[in-house]
Image 1 (tube, rainbow, N blue to C red):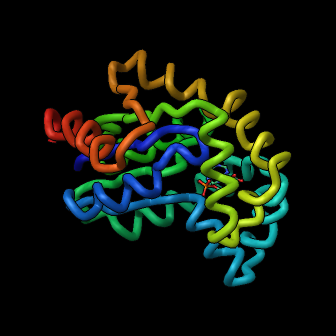
Image 2: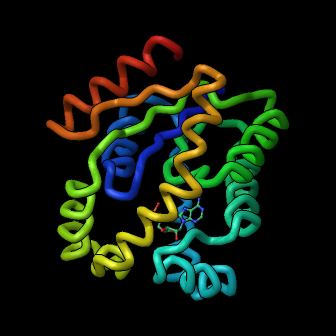
Length: 191
Ligand code: AMP
């Protein structure tokens, strides 16, 4: 198995780059944001609970997200690997993922972090909010809250994987195809 984490703050381009990576590599995309929104749209209990956190720009509790990822992966255990997009977002999530992968005799092979400064991110998210219909992209206070959560809870993951020599930062501003080429150059060394 080859397992990649696409890391970076909200609006860094993880979704856009995931789509391009999926077209090139035979990996399965797992976006916890997409899975949570699908639950919300289906009106499930989990989705309704998660929506309270999402609409405030807060992280959904770890146990909810970890359980969802575990189910998703177990149903796809025969696949060549995963691209994790928006997961893990806390140290307990990263530890749970490392543990879960050992059950597949696998590990995280590479963590690629898209680096974009905050002013550019706010601009991108507000622009996305005009068309995405995502309420959490439309309000600057909610967006700033999401950055706060990222700084406090998600950024420490970078160190978690740096200490395992798995983290590589990639410039996330510029042409989409150039950013994609940088990501591929890291992956192609390992795959
Ligand atoms: P995203 O689509 O990745 O930007 O996620 C949108 C929102 O879903 C986040 O602001 C969180 O409220 C929630 N969310 C997505 N992934 C996670 C996660 N791994 N842990 C906790 N909350 C998450």
